[in-house]
Amino acid sequence: MSRRGADPAVSRREAQEALGAGFFRSRWVEPPDGVEELEPARLAPGFRAAGAACGLKGGGRTDVGLVACDADEVNSALLLTRNAAAAAPVRVCRDECDAGSIRAAVVNSGNANAATGARGYRDAVAMRDGAAEALGIEPRAVAVAETGTIGVPLPLGDVLRGVADAHAALSPAGGADFARSIMTTDRGPKLCTLELDGVTVSAQAKGAGMTEPGFATMLCFVQTDAVVTDPEATLRAAVAPSFERITVDGQMSTNDTVLLQANGGSGRELRPELLDAVLLQLALEIVADGEGAKRVGRAEVTEAATPEEAERVARAIANSPLVQTALAGGDPNWGRIAQAAGMALAGERLPELGAEHIDAAGLGSDEPEAELSLRLGRGESSAHVYFSDLTCEYVRLNAEYTT
Image (cartoon, rainbow, N blue to C red; front, side, top):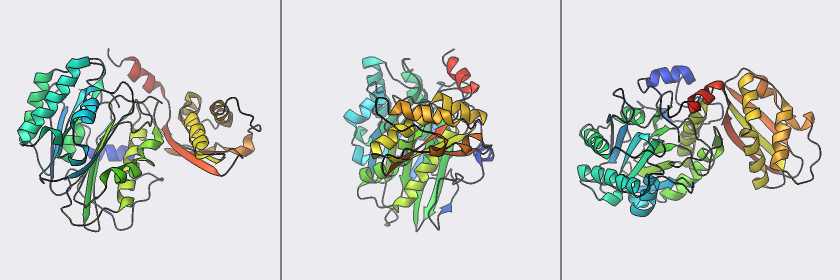
């Protein structure tokens, strides 16, 4: 989950200029052959979306979003944070939503509605029910998501007015407004619409801080007119190499939500490699947009004894503030990588890790995406984690978070 303070007036064009032209702009993403990028504001056929302002973020910025499918039947999957202090909207989705048949999602940014007790739960239910009534559908077919400040009661009346305004503005070309409505400290909206083999996929995401896998670490909404017979398995398979492989600050959010909706209107099956590429690019956009971040790193661990060991060491490297600051400063200090790996394997006997085991050249480069790797020499397993650098701006943003 990321937090407040960004200027949603930043256009998609400006965001692309800052991060590179085109949606698939990371060196680590391989889009399938033949994929076509469409106007990102236009959703997959059969879906509508909108954003509205209710005052949560102030300054007339959009902070309530609504996305809905016009079809009576939808195959969907809803994946939620594993944080034990899960926010009210997450609890409502777990308890009172039909995850396999979600027709709509209502979202606010600016207030996480987390650690707000029984009132928070009631408010999340009311927000969901307000959207369901406006759309004329069953409440259990509406997911609710919220993001922003923790521990502050939701101004429910204002939010419900925002929900009504968003409903009135629903449009097949409302993807950009919806993407802006879910932003907090994001520097720009994160969205795409793509077509491959007669299937369209559109997606919108947000995230810039409080980002560590455990399950996802942000909000993401995906719509498609493809036929998806097992949406939960499909979504989990796409999340594993993307949202489960990123970190900004090692902190697990209370509000993480990912929703996949498929209406089957195209009559064609979804190619998994398309969803994989979409989610990985969005995940990397979140890392690149880490609060105050300027660079993205990829920490790869090879020759580990087990996959679990490889992942544990990769996460220790990626979450090390010493490694993250080295990435920020362009300092190829391989000793920090060795230290983080040793910490992850504390208590075990490990051959001394030296320069011959570590490639830290990426740390010292000036490229926006940097590679670093470590060979443990203990087996044949490997894992990698994507992470952002750590700058003074991250400290400033979070030191002034509520003030």
